[in-house]
Image 1 (cartoon, rainbow, N blue to C red):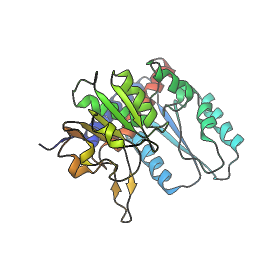
Image 2 (spheres, rainbow, N blue to C red):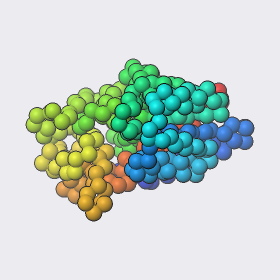
Image 3 (cartoon, rainbow, N blue to C red):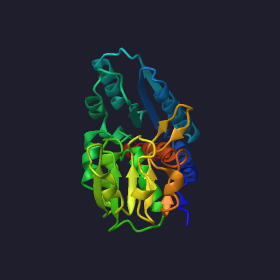
Image 4 (cartoon, rainbow, N blue to C red):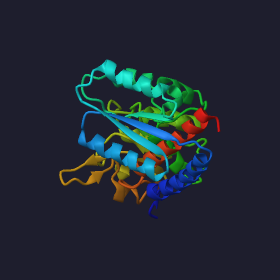
Length: 284
C-alpha cells in the first residue's frame, strides 16, 4: 500500500486562515502585529525566501518590513540595526535571514535579537527553553514538522525516531522536540557510519541534509513515517528532496513530498510565531 501524503500546502493554508482571523481580531483592538526581516546582501535564494515571507505576512493581515543591508555592512552596524528593532515597540518579530555573507558571524547576531521578538527561535535563550520543554519560540521548520506529525494522529510517545542532519536550524531543534514528545531519538550526520543500520529500525525518519536520494527504500522500515526536509536543485532547476520519494512511498505509511511538504509549513509556522510574539508583547 502506498504511503499517505502529508500535504504541507493544505495544512499551511489552514494555519494561515486561522492566523488571518486572529490578526483581524487584534487589529480591531488596535494592535497590528509586525514582522521585520533583515537581509544582508543580495543572495538570490535568500531574496526569494525573504519576498515569500513578506508577501505571506501581508496576506495574513500583518505589517511587514524588509530591511535590506549592503553586503559590506560592518558587524557593528548589523548589531546596531537589531538593537534598534529590539527597542521599537511597534515591531513584534525580528528575523535575520541566513546565511550571512562571509565574514559576518551569525551566532552573535542571533543572540542579539531580543528573545521575546525572536520569531525564528534561534536565540540561545529560546533554544535553551525548548530543550527544557518550556514555552519558547521554536524554529519554524521544526515547528512545522511537528505539526505535520501531529496530523497523522499517530501517538508519538515510545516511537523510535532518527534525525539525519545536526544543524542548529533543523536537526538539533527537531530532535529535541521529538524527545520532548517522548520519542527515542537517534541523531545521524555526515560522520555516521552505516546510516541504514539506524534508519531501518526507525518509526520516524527526518532527513535534513540536502543530498538527493540519500534515503532509499532499502533503508526504510515498512510503515515508517518519512519527513523530507532536503531541498536541492538539479541542473534543470527541479527541486529535489533527500528521499527517493517514489520508492520509499511504497514502504512508508506517511511521507512528505518535495516540494509541497515541509516547505509551506515553515512560513506558516513563522506567521504563527509572529502572532504569538505580538500577543505576548501586547499582553492580549
